[in-house]
Image 1 (cartoon, rainbow, N blue to C red):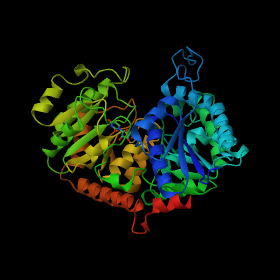
Image 2 (image 1 turned 180 degrees about the vertical axis):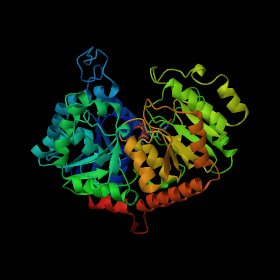
Image 3 (image 1 turned 60 degrees about the horizontal axis):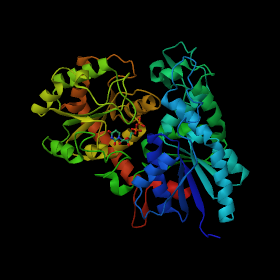
Image 4 (image 1 turned 45 degrees about the horizontal axis):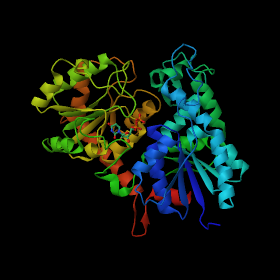
Length: 481
Ligand code: UDP
């Protein structure tokens, strides 16, 4: 029988969830005496293998899974006759994994003579609790969102429906009385959720077991979100630990690899890491705007045109990760007609801007001293990466927790300014000019935002310290866990 205990990590199958789980695996492997196993579908296990060094002591295990139908009946359509969107497919796929997970735990016990010590499952895989409990295995939930965002989600999904919410601003149960959310800060699907839709059904299934778990681990830094953490702790009757920005401290500057896809250079992106860095080298410190809407989101054709016109008028240098607009295959080649005529060439000739197709080396760009601000959809990984480098944010939240991340960053930390919000937001050239000028120009606002972003960056770095016997709050949280 093996002497060492095992921890099983089980992420939800979306890129924004897989990355933090890999980092969590490395952190647990470093700080505990346990063997760590990452569990997922065959495709994701391949991705884990591609980012883990071959000699990494972390094990990966793939659950049998038929990817051809993502757990849906073939040709399934939703009630509007449309193919199920990605997220709904993922919900079905995750449900389909349940028997395979239960089988995995039984096989594990048979092979090792005892069950694993603990299962750390994604918040979206709350049902893992039942199999863990049945075997006397500790269970913890890992939320890949921040504390504030997780608390907002829990409150919103726990208090459906919102279709009847008439007021433009409303109170969120569980938050202080004075706290207000705006209707426009709810995703479209949430505004339409009546309790019988796919999203409501999914959250109704996953949430109750999460409240019965032994602990909640949060992909955040306690010092960065004291308010959100207090609210979240008030909601969860279990220890809540902020285990830090899930990147090793050595990567807090010039991290070589932030994701599964940033080795796509040359042909696919047209621009390599070196090109980006060389281009940034030719610009003054804190002058360049980096623009990206994450790994899945994109904006509409009209919004894209206005943003481009705004950038050209504003005159600040920029690197923009472009992706086909809403309504087109996001993986298709980017067409110049989606931007003002001659835009890319003009920007390149004036040395004002470059377009990166599909995928950019985000951490390298954020870590470069010429990067002055990040126009971001406020996905939580992007927020943490930007903050780890002390780069203020111009926010354009599009969906899910992005709205709450944007609100938290602007109201609690003062490091972000919202340009607009939502997938159907109207955007004008003048707004782009005004907001970029406030954040990148030599203004009081920009100096203040930069100062505050550097304070947050220091908090993050201090939380991850683990040297000479000294440990930061995130490392202490992992050790307590
Ligand atoms: N990312 C990247 N290059 C890109 C787009 C995204 O490296 O061109 C990475 C980014 O660094 C982050 C992740 O993909 O780690 C996006 O996660 P986030 O939570 O910000 O947004 P999501 O993609 O989940 O909406």
